[in-house]
Length: 306
Image (cartoon, helix red, strand yellow):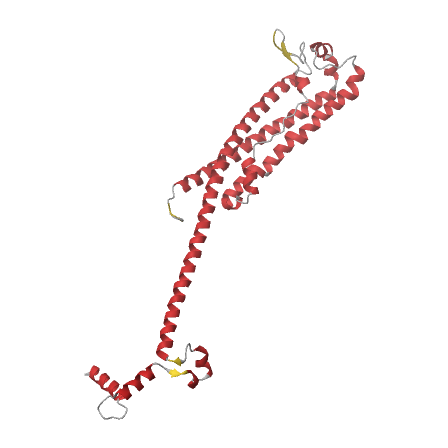
Protein backbone atom coordinates (compact mmCIF):
# COMPACT_ATOMS: atom_id res chain seq x y z
CA UNK A 1 0.00 0.00 0.00
CA UNK A 2 2.76 2.40 0.93
CA UNK A 3 4.65 1.71 -2.30
CA UNK A 4 1.47 2.36 -4.25
CA UNK A 5 1.11 5.75 -2.60
CA UNK A 6 4.69 6.62 -3.52
CA UNK A 7 4.08 5.63 -7.13
CA UNK A 8 0.89 7.68 -7.27
CA UNK A 9 2.67 10.66 -5.79
CA UNK A 10 5.45 10.37 -8.34
CA UNK A 11 2.86 10.08 -11.14
CA UNK A 12 0.95 13.13 -9.97
CA UNK A 13 4.22 15.07 -9.90
CA UNK A 14 4.92 14.19 -13.52
CA UNK A 15 1.25 14.70 -14.67
CA UNK A 16 1.33 18.47 -14.44
CA UNK A 17 -1.98 19.01 -16.29
CA UNK A 18 -3.77 16.33 -14.21
CA UNK A 19 -5.28 14.63 -17.24
CA UNK A 20 -4.28 11.17 -16.05
CA UNK A 21 -1.71 10.78 -18.85
CA UNK A 22 2.01 11.66 -18.90
CA UNK A 23 2.65 13.26 -22.24
CA UNK A 24 6.00 13.45 -24.03
CA UNK A 25 6.20 17.14 -23.16
CA UNK A 26 5.60 16.43 -19.45
CA UNK A 27 8.23 13.65 -19.48
CA UNK A 28 10.80 15.86 -21.23
CA UNK A 29 10.13 18.70 -18.76
CA UNK A 30 10.60 16.31 -15.82
CA UNK A 31 13.83 14.96 -17.38
CA UNK A 32 15.13 18.48 -17.93
CA UNK A 33 14.27 19.35 -14.32
CA UNK A 34 16.16 16.26 -13.08
CA UNK A 35 19.19 17.45 -14.96
CA UNK A 36 19.32 20.49 -12.77
CA UNK A 37 18.88 24.23 -12.90
CA UNK A 38 20.58 26.53 -15.35
CA UNK A 39 23.68 28.11 -13.85
CA UNK A 40 22.38 31.60 -14.65
CA UNK A 41 19.35 31.00 -12.42
CA UNK A 42 21.49 30.16 -9.36
CA UNK A 43 22.69 32.43 -6.56
CA UNK A 44 26.39 33.39 -6.37
CA UNK A 45 27.33 30.59 -3.96
CA UNK A 46 25.75 27.81 -6.00
CA UNK A 47 27.28 29.25 -9.18
CA UNK A 48 30.67 29.13 -7.40
CA UNK A 49 30.44 25.42 -6.64
CA UNK A 50 28.64 24.38 -9.86
CA UNK A 51 30.63 22.40 -12.41
CA UNK A 52 29.16 22.76 -15.93
CA UNK A 53 26.11 24.69 -17.12
CA UNK A 54 23.47 23.25 -14.77
CA UNK A 55 23.19 22.56 -11.05
CA UNK A 56 21.61 19.45 -9.57
CA UNK A 57 21.45 18.65 -5.87
CA UNK A 58 21.59 14.96 -6.64
CA UNK A 59 24.68 15.38 -8.76
CA UNK A 60 26.21 17.70 -6.16
CA UNK A 61 25.76 15.21 -3.33
CA UNK A 62 26.97 12.34 -5.51
CA UNK A 63 30.16 14.24 -6.27
CA UNK A 64 30.52 15.24 -2.60
CA UNK A 65 30.22 11.62 -1.47
CA UNK A 66 32.69 10.49 -4.10
CA UNK A 67 35.15 13.22 -3.10
CA UNK A 68 34.80 12.35 0.58
CA UNK A 69 35.45 8.66 -0.10
CA UNK A 70 38.49 9.51 -2.21
CA UNK A 71 39.73 11.82 0.57
CA UNK A 72 39.38 9.05 3.14
CA UNK A 73 41.27 6.62 0.90
CA UNK A 74 44.13 9.08 0.37
CA UNK A 75 44.16 10.17 4.03
CA UNK A 76 44.33 6.67 5.45
CA UNK A 77 46.79 5.64 2.75
CA UNK A 78 49.14 8.45 3.75
CA UNK A 79 48.56 7.69 7.44
CA UNK A 80 49.43 4.03 6.97
CA UNK A 81 52.44 5.00 4.88
CA UNK A 82 53.76 7.27 7.62
CA UNK A 83 53.08 4.57 10.20
CA UNK A 84 55.03 1.97 8.23
CA UNK A 85 57.87 4.44 7.66
CA UNK A 86 58.03 5.29 11.36
CA UNK A 87 57.92 1.61 12.27
CA UNK A 88 60.71 0.98 9.79
CA UNK A 89 62.79 3.70 11.46
CA UNK A 90 62.16 2.15 14.86
CA UNK A 91 63.16 -1.25 13.51
CA UNK A 92 66.39 0.16 12.06
CA UNK A 93 67.14 1.81 15.41
CA UNK A 94 66.55 -1.53 17.11
CA UNK A 95 69.01 -3.23 14.79
CA UNK A 96 71.59 -0.52 15.51
CA UNK A 97 70.99 -1.02 19.21
CA UNK A 98 71.55 -4.78 19.02
CA UNK A 99 74.72 -4.33 16.96
CA UNK A 100 76.04 -1.74 19.42
CA UNK A 101 75.31 -4.02 22.36
CA UNK A 102 77.16 -6.95 20.80
CA UNK A 103 80.17 -4.80 19.90
CA UNK A 104 80.26 -3.21 23.35
CA UNK A 105 80.06 -6.61 24.99
CA UNK A 106 83.04 -7.86 22.98
CA UNK A 107 85.04 -4.73 23.81
CA UNK A 108 84.17 -4.96 27.50
CA UNK A 109 85.40 -8.56 27.48
CA UNK A 110 88.68 -7.21 26.11
CA UNK A 111 88.73 -4.54 28.83
CA UNK A 112 88.26 -7.26 31.44
CA UNK A 113 91.25 -9.20 30.10
CA UNK A 114 93.33 -6.02 29.88
CA UNK A 115 92.43 -4.97 33.44
CA UNK A 116 93.18 -8.40 34.91
CA UNK A 117 96.58 -8.43 33.17
CA UNK A 118 97.29 -4.91 34.42
CA UNK A 119 96.28 -5.92 37.95
CA UNK A 120 98.56 -8.97 37.89
CA UNK A 121 101.48 -6.84 36.72
CA UNK A 122 100.76 -4.22 39.38
CA UNK A 123 100.73 -6.84 42.13
CA UNK A 124 104.01 -8.27 40.82
CA UNK A 125 105.64 -4.81 40.85
CA UNK A 126 104.46 -4.12 44.40
CA UNK A 127 105.85 -7.44 45.59
CA UNK A 128 109.21 -6.74 43.94
CA UNK A 129 109.71 -3.22 45.32
CA UNK A 130 108.10 -3.97 48.69
CA UNK A 131 110.78 -6.64 49.11
CA UNK A 132 113.48 -4.03 48.54
CA UNK A 133 111.86 -1.54 50.90
CA UNK A 134 111.48 -4.16 53.67
CA UNK A 135 115.23 -4.84 53.52
CA UNK A 136 116.21 -1.18 53.42
CA UNK A 137 117.14 -0.88 57.12
CA UNK A 138 118.49 -4.42 57.46
CA UNK A 139 120.03 -5.18 54.08
CA UNK A 140 121.79 -8.28 52.93
CA UNK A 141 124.40 -8.29 50.19
CA UNK A 142 123.38 -6.98 46.79
CA UNK A 143 119.71 -6.13 47.56
CA UNK A 144 119.62 -3.97 44.43
CA UNK A 145 120.62 -6.85 42.16
CA UNK A 146 118.35 -9.81 41.47
CA UNK A 147 120.29 -12.81 40.21
CA UNK A 148 118.39 -15.60 38.43
CA UNK A 149 121.34 -17.57 37.10
CA UNK A 150 124.78 -17.21 35.54
CA UNK A 151 124.70 -14.01 33.54
CA UNK A 152 120.98 -13.64 34.22
CA UNK A 153 120.22 -10.72 36.51
CA UNK A 154 118.34 -7.45 36.66
CA UNK A 155 118.37 -4.21 38.63
CA UNK A 156 114.89 -3.19 39.91
CA UNK A 157 115.89 0.42 40.56
CA UNK A 158 117.02 0.72 36.95
CA UNK A 159 113.42 0.01 35.94
CA UNK A 160 112.03 2.23 38.69
CA UNK A 161 111.34 5.09 36.31
CA UNK A 162 109.25 2.92 33.97
CA UNK A 163 105.57 3.83 33.87
CA UNK A 164 102.54 2.08 32.43
CA UNK A 165 99.45 4.34 32.30
CA UNK A 166 96.17 2.47 32.41
CA UNK A 167 94.52 2.81 28.99
CA UNK A 168 91.86 0.16 28.26
CA UNK A 169 90.42 -0.22 24.73
CA UNK A 170 87.54 2.13 23.86
CA UNK A 171 87.29 2.09 20.05
CA UNK A 172 83.68 0.83 19.93
CA UNK A 173 82.56 3.30 22.59
CA UNK A 174 84.06 6.25 20.73
CA UNK A 175 82.57 5.03 17.44
CA UNK A 176 78.98 4.83 18.69
CA UNK A 177 79.32 8.25 20.29
CA UNK A 178 80.66 9.64 17.03
CA UNK A 179 77.97 8.18 14.74
CA UNK A 180 75.15 9.25 17.06
CA UNK A 181 73.80 5.76 17.83
CA UNK A 182 74.63 5.94 21.54
CA UNK A 183 71.07 7.18 22.22
CA UNK A 184 69.65 3.86 20.97
CA UNK A 185 71.10 2.06 24.01
CA UNK A 186 68.46 3.44 26.36
CA UNK A 187 68.93 5.29 29.63
CA UNK A 188 69.87 2.35 31.88
CA UNK A 189 72.32 0.68 29.49
CA UNK A 190 73.69 4.08 28.46
CA UNK A 191 74.41 4.96 32.09
CA UNK A 192 76.23 1.68 32.73
CA UNK A 193 78.26 2.00 29.53
CA UNK A 194 79.17 5.60 30.28
CA UNK A 195 80.22 4.63 33.81
CA UNK A 196 82.42 1.88 32.39
CA UNK A 197 84.18 4.10 29.87
CA UNK A 198 84.00 7.58 31.40
CA UNK A 199 83.13 7.01 35.05
CA UNK A 200 84.85 8.69 38.00
CA UNK A 201 86.53 5.46 39.09
CA UNK A 202 88.18 5.01 35.72
CA UNK A 203 89.27 8.65 35.50
CA UNK A 204 91.02 8.53 38.89
CA UNK A 205 92.60 5.22 37.95
CA UNK A 206 93.99 6.67 34.73
CA UNK A 207 95.27 9.77 36.55
CA UNK A 208 96.98 7.72 39.27
CA UNK A 209 98.74 5.45 36.78
CA UNK A 210 99.84 8.39 34.68
CA UNK A 211 100.23 11.89 36.15
CA UNK A 212 100.46 10.88 39.82
CA UNK A 213 102.92 8.07 39.11
CA UNK A 214 104.98 10.41 36.97
CA UNK A 215 105.62 12.61 40.02
CA UNK A 216 107.63 9.83 41.70
CA UNK A 217 109.62 8.88 38.61
CA UNK A 218 110.37 12.53 37.88
CA UNK A 219 111.52 13.17 41.47
CA UNK A 220 113.76 10.08 41.36
CA UNK A 221 115.36 11.27 38.09
CA UNK A 222 115.88 14.74 39.56
CA UNK A 223 117.51 13.22 42.65
CA UNK A 224 119.92 11.21 40.53
CA UNK A 225 120.72 14.20 38.29
CA UNK A 226 121.16 16.72 41.11
CA UNK A 227 122.92 14.57 43.72
CA UNK A 228 124.08 11.14 42.67
CA UNK A 229 126.01 12.34 39.64
CA UNK A 230 127.99 14.74 41.89
CA UNK A 231 128.55 12.35 44.80
CA UNK A 232 129.44 9.19 42.87
CA UNK A 233 132.36 8.63 40.56
CA UNK A 234 130.16 7.17 37.86
CA UNK A 235 126.43 6.58 37.52
CA UNK A 236 125.80 3.57 35.30
CA UNK A 237 122.48 1.84 35.90
CA UNK A 238 123.36 -0.94 33.42
CA UNK A 239 126.42 -2.06 35.40
CA UNK A 240 125.96 -4.65 38.19
CA UNK A 241 129.11 -3.27 39.77
CA UNK A 242 127.45 0.13 40.18
CA UNK A 243 124.65 -1.33 42.32
CA UNK A 244 127.00 -3.49 44.36
CA UNK A 245 129.63 -0.82 45.00
CA UNK A 246 127.17 1.96 45.80
CA UNK A 247 124.64 -0.07 47.76
CA UNK A 248 125.30 1.65 51.07
CA UNK A 249 125.25 5.10 49.47
CA UNK A 250 121.81 4.40 48.02
CA UNK A 251 120.57 2.99 51.32
CA UNK A 252 121.69 6.16 53.08
CA UNK A 253 119.66 8.29 50.71
CA UNK A 254 116.46 8.72 52.74
CA UNK A 255 114.90 10.77 49.97
CA UNK A 256 114.92 7.74 47.64
CA UNK A 257 113.60 5.52 50.42
CA UNK A 258 110.68 7.88 51.07
CA UNK A 259 110.00 8.17 47.36
CA UNK A 260 109.79 4.39 47.15
CA UNK A 261 107.51 4.21 50.20
CA UNK A 262 105.03 6.72 48.79
CA UNK A 263 105.06 5.13 45.37
CA UNK A 264 104.24 1.73 46.83
CA UNK A 265 101.32 3.39 48.61
CA UNK A 266 100.12 4.73 45.26
CA UNK A 267 100.49 1.31 43.64
CA UNK A 268 98.43 -0.30 46.39
CA UNK A 269 95.75 2.35 45.88
CA UNK A 270 95.79 1.55 42.17
CA UNK A 271 95.28 -2.16 42.93
CA UNK A 272 92.19 -1.30 44.96
CA UNK A 273 90.87 0.88 42.13
CA UNK A 274 91.48 -1.88 39.60
CA UNK A 275 89.43 -4.34 41.68
CA UNK A 276 86.57 -1.83 41.94
CA UNK A 277 86.74 -1.18 38.20
CA UNK A 278 86.57 -4.90 37.46
CA UNK A 279 83.30 -5.06 39.39
CA UNK A 280 81.99 -2.13 37.38
CA UNK A 281 82.80 -3.91 34.13
CA UNK A 282 81.25 -7.14 35.42
CA UNK A 283 77.99 -5.32 36.24
CA UNK A 284 77.86 -3.71 32.80
CA UNK A 285 78.63 -6.93 30.93
CA UNK A 286 75.99 -8.83 32.90
CA UNK A 287 73.29 -6.25 32.12
CA UNK A 288 74.28 -6.07 28.45
CA UNK A 289 74.13 -9.87 28.20
CA UNK A 290 70.61 -9.79 29.66
CA UNK A 291 69.57 -7.16 27.12
CA UNK A 292 71.04 -9.15 24.23
CA UNK A 293 69.28 -12.33 25.38
CA UNK A 294 66.01 -10.40 25.62
CA UNK A 295 66.44 -9.05 22.08
CA UNK A 296 67.35 -12.51 20.76
CA UNK A 297 64.14 -13.86 22.31
CA UNK A 298 62.00 -11.46 20.27
CA UNK A 299 60.66 -12.24 16.78
CA UNK A 300 59.70 -9.81 14.07
CA UNK A 301 57.07 -9.65 11.33
CA UNK A 302 58.20 -7.07 8.77
CA UNK A 303 58.90 -4.17 11.16
CA UNK A 304 56.77 -5.30 14.09
CA UNK A 305 58.60 -6.81 17.06
CA UNK A 306 56.94 -9.33 19.39
